[in-house]
Length: 256
Image (cartoon, rainbow, N blue to C red; front, side):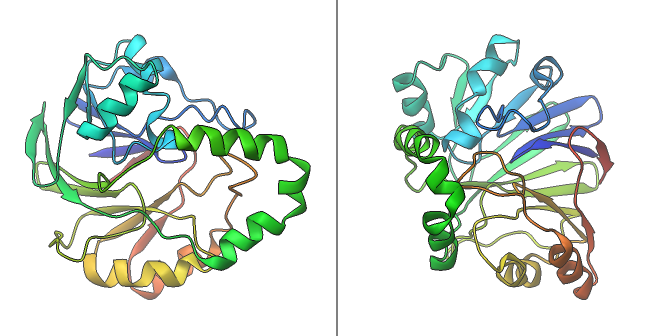
């Protein structure tokens, strides 16, 4: 298996002749970032949506229009798509506990939870001069976020090809009543939303025991609510657990 990061939470997973796109997002709120190659991404066999927040789901219509065959998302996500003018005729509803096959890649759906932002992170956004000088952008983002409200439809995906497994968290949260697989060859961990994210990551590494961890969502995709995260402590924390860590570059392939 191979994995490519397009920025934010957007991933392309390849297993044999099959490709699966995850949470495609064009990052139009920060055009200085890497531009997603829409035609390449839309050439995937299907897309998986971990949860229908705007930075995971809003732009999926652009990929469907470019030829993406289908999108697996929650029933709530399909309703959100219909309300926001996103083509929903190629969307398939999924729920926690589902298992299915996309070409050569097996998929398991697990209940998950969204990362809970800590007070220091929220205070840092509210009190930052960057927010003050970009108040119009902040207001526009808040309005957009309201159109993409999630419920409990936050999922993690386990993708398997041959003897390789990738476990993808769309947001850094887990469900206390769900038993997750351990020992994945690669854990994709969204590294933003807490002031000391490296400490917040520790219980995930202890519980899931991955062989390697791959960061995403650490870019400045929608300022002033995001920032580019310094990833040195991410690397050190993973290495302290004896886990190989990867801070990917946009658009490059990495072997699982």
